[in-house]
Length: 200
Image 1: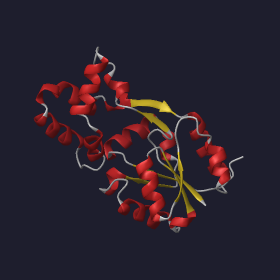
Image 2: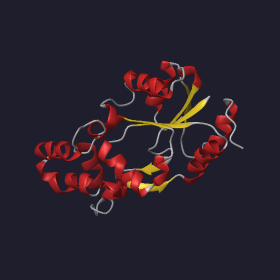
Image 3: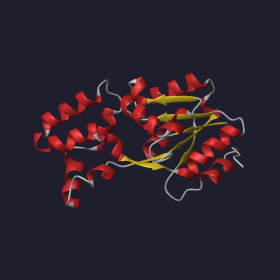
Image 4: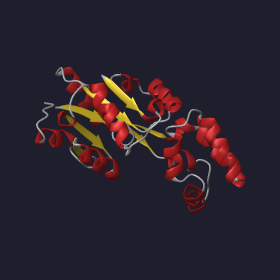
């Protein structure tokens, strides 16, 4: 069985608040902005657009009173990152050192994935990386799981997918992929071992 990692909040911490705490003095005002103008539905939409900047400008047209804050989501996007989840990155590398192929399946704008990979080179270590911004389709759409299986060259039952989103985990499971729902505190080594993947 080959392991497929999501990236955000599985291997690399991500939260728009990492950036917006620097731009808002009032936490309630920040949360209001995130709820109104930078909703997750919009963020997921940016994960498949051809131009991140154009998508942000279209959003600015809808919320002109948040123009500065919205544009920062493009120009200062790297500040949304919170650094690697070291134990999971170490696990990825241990699996590879054992000769196992290790893959990625992630919702990520193609431009921002390139920035993240420059900052965190381990993002270039996957055998196969299926990134929504490269494919024009995002999780939990069934098509992205079809692309994953096609690229990896194994049946769905031969893959083990680790994701922090319940919705994505359920979609992968419905497709026939074994899953682990990763949340803070989950011992991923134990979870993989319980599913027949040894990393020690």
